[in-house]
Image (cartoon, rainbow, N blue to C red; front, side):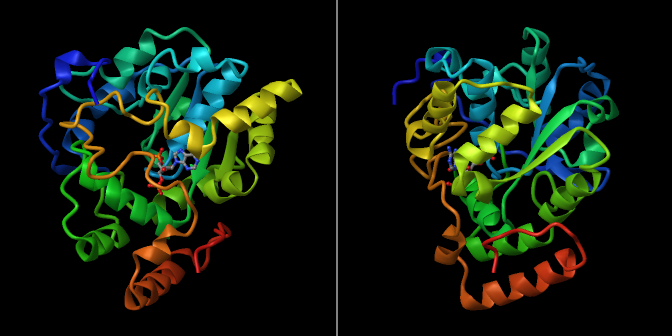
Length: 300
Ligand code: A3P
């Protein structure tokens, strides 16, 4: 695809990062190295945070929230790529503005994305509205594997069996899926947190969109709800370059290797896990999640 959005990046290839520990959480080195900037960043009282483990439906939720803020106006939602409309708090990369640079230029109410586990989210955000979206671990793992293959902002994944183990042991960017989801879950009743599940949005997008609207204190006309349901569906978002990261060059995300909007399904893990991987996974999962009140559907 001819790159119109960032022509200066046409021939640019990003070096893949190393992982660095920040309070025991592995992060791409650029993120860990710039942590002080995130820590010192001042939120505004009407900022809304979307907090997810990677590959859990972040972009989907960003699409829904932005459509809601624009009252279902599709043109407004195509005003810029999703990473500019709802910047990524801990985004630091050569050649592109940082998330914080984009956020400070935005008019309120601002919506901000983060993948940080709750303990790394600066404390002033804890008192503000946050939408958390979580996805079952097996599909998240599969999606994260394919995302590593095509995305130079993450380390090389190695082969599938290798990545499978790396993920299980939390040695991937943004750390352990288990710690991430449990951390947010345990705090959800102490703060203004709406906790959503990818599988629920997939099952009944309208119902979950209405939960978001209620949380954001938005009263939506029926035709706007219908527009949001339609425009945030996988089949529409996958063809929208302002949602599907098609505005980035191959040297950052190579969508010939794997699409950003890859499958958008529940249960794709069944096409990847071997029987023995599934047994190992279930055993490990039970040890990590058995005592938690956080229950996912479609995992076993
Ligand atoms: P798959 O790789 O399983 O297809 P994130 O935005 O957190 O990075 O998550 C990306 C995952 O969400 C990808 O999963 C992507 O296809 C899926 N996704 C994005 N938009 C979606 C939508 N509108 N409906 C369903 N899934 C969506």
